Amino acid sequence: MKRKKGYYSISAVAKMFSVHQQTIRLYEKQGLITPKRSSGNTRLFSEEDVNKLEEVIYLTHQLGINLAGVEMILKLQKKIRRLQKEMNALFDDTHAELKQEQLHAEQTIKANVKDIMTFRRRPAAPKELPPATSAESSSTSTNNTTKKAPFDVDNWEISYDD
Image 1 (spheres, rainbow, N blue to C red):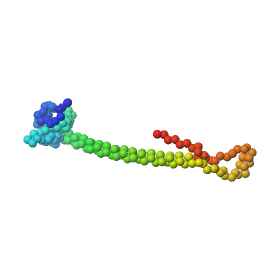
Image 2 (image 1 turned 90 degrees about the horizontal axis):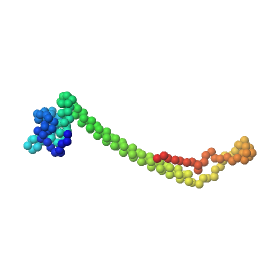
Image 3 (image 1 turned 90 degrees about the vertical axis):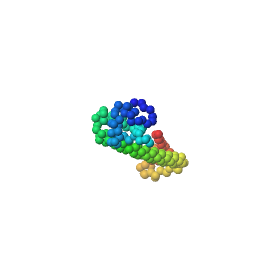
């Protein structure tokens, strides 16, 4: 139902929902709705009050829930909204912390890669092979093969996936 913004009188609200004004007064007395009051003590229903009244009328008239049940439902809805806000704040804080950790990890990785690349670019010192045993020296001399170092740092390749 589309309504204008502003405040409504109890008679206008009663017509909107086809209920008696006394029903609306009862809901106010039970604490289910709390409209503002003018200086002349006239009830002024805001858009929020009208929406809440619409929910109360739906719960009582359409679903047949008694006023104590409606009160409990409204309290639970309020608690759920509060808990949802807390969860959202916790989620936002955790997200921010994870973002900071990610940035720190990326900076650390970049610094480590830079160090590795600096190490890789240094001229290689001449590599000395350990002295050959008698069996190795005889096979080396007969086969004319040369021994390589156990590993060669200059041939390392590092790749990172983004």
